Length: 172
Image 1 (cartoon, one colour):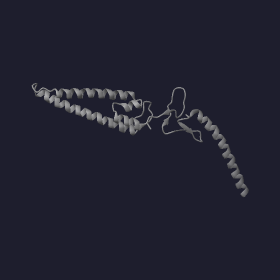
Image 2 (tube, rainbow, N blue to C red):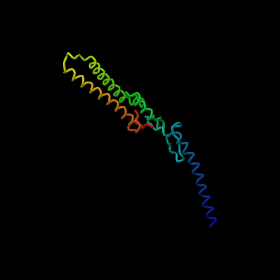
Image 3 (cartoon, rainbow, N blue to C red):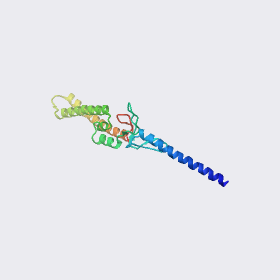
Image 4 (cartoon, rainbow, N blue to C red):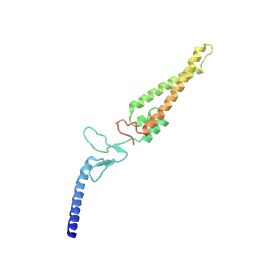
């Protein structure tokens, strides 16, 4: 019985040696398709991406872990602190960034024109202008609050990965 046990353990060691040699071949094959800075090959020859990298498939070459993801904390901070779509520009979401800038410019123009008309209000014109000015100030206050909450919503969306970058890849 003891001889049988020694023979089985010998076979297991030979199989492990063969697997180790085969692993070297698999890992070398994996290194052809796995980015050096973005991923590591495991013992089964599978390219595992680091946390801040992902695979972006291009037309000709498929190299895994070749794309550095954008940081969601930076994009949320840019959106909160600077607003106007800077977080979207950082993540290469250019259409959203231009829409936000355009909306903010229009809202700024409306608010300043309404406030300037309220400051230059002439009481001799009548009560119709007074009600228009109050309505305008109310609308401009609503628009300012709207843009403020829009910034907060965008920052939350960046932090919870509801927004992807311009290439459709999650933020890290």
